[in-house]
Structures are given as C-alpha cells and as structure tokens.
Image 1 (cartoon, helix red, strand yellow):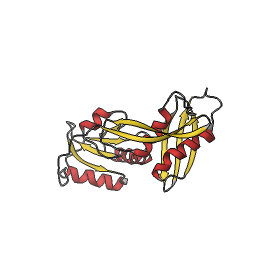
Image 2 (cartoon, rainbow, N blue to C red):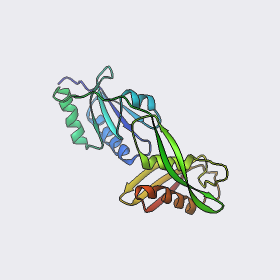
Image 3 (tube, helix red, strand yellow):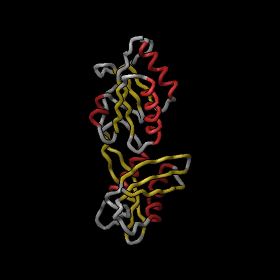
Image 4 (cartoon, helix red, strand yellow):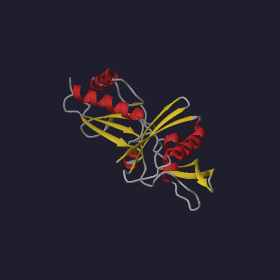
Length: 214
C-alpha cells in the first residue's frame, strides 16, 4: 500500500495531560510505521504554526503528506489502534478532510485572579491576548496568576515559576509547578490558597500543589 501519510503533527498546550497522553500514543504509532516524521507544536508558544493550520482545539492531531499538506485531522485523545486505523484509511484514500476551516482570530480574554494586599487575599481582573483560537481557560488563569506582578500586591509565586502539568478531575485540581532550586522561604500554603480561589471560578474546590525544582 502506498504510504501517503508522511508526517504527523500534534498541537497541544505544554501543560496539558491529555496532550501528553496523545504524545505517548503517537510514540507507539511511530514505532509501528517506518519513516514517519513527527512534530509536536505547543499552541501557547508557537502561535504562527498553530494559526497556519487553523487549529481550534487542544489537542489536535494532523496527518500530512510529503509536502506538508493536511490530509486529515482529529481532536482529543484516541488510542494507538484507532490512530493506526485512521492512518490506514488515509493511505487507502477512503478518509480525507471535508471542509475548509475559518482563519484563527486573536481574542482578548479576561480572568479574575487573586493576590495579596495588606495581608488580605483580593481579586484582580486581568486581560490575556489569545493569539490563536484555542481556548484553555483554566490553564490560562493559572498562568495569569503566576505571571502577574502589580505594585502594592504580593504574589507568592517566584517570577521564575513555570507551569509543568495540570490535571483536573471533577472539582479537584492537581498542579505541578517548577521553581528555581535557589528559591527559599516559599509559602506553599498561600500559593495553594490563591490557586484555589482563582480556580474556584471554574468549579474547582480542592487543589493539590506539587513543587519541583530546576
């Protein structure tokens, strides 16, 4: 059978567990298909490529030909056997994209985060310019909290803090952050409190915070 699919691209957010699971699936697919090129694109980092392929949902998997033309795509997570079957159908030319997609549009999103002022936790409204059409409100709210610095307010997260991974299950959130090894006197309880309040707008009532060092 002619191998039409020559490349697979995975578009996902860098901290998304669903995207990481799909990355593992595609790793298994690559071991089954000889000569298959693979590329992972973090939509919150490489916005130009994301917009070029008009990605709307996290995660999205694209199948491309030798000239990087899109043949087919699917959104979300699929198991290895299903993904291999999709590739087989594309190579048989029984599966193809059917409709053109609208261009991505920039959007200004508003998030309420919580910082500390005069020993009191207070809400603050922040704006985020989303340069793609991919929306991830909970992850974006966390990043807004980590990055926001306003005179007169205390943010207990060191400026070097990065979001490594999140996992949401019903009303529970597990959040993995990475901080510099040199950071001392981290107020983990205050961090958890601000994360919990910030995510309460999305129905989260319990937060487990894991801190890693670099």
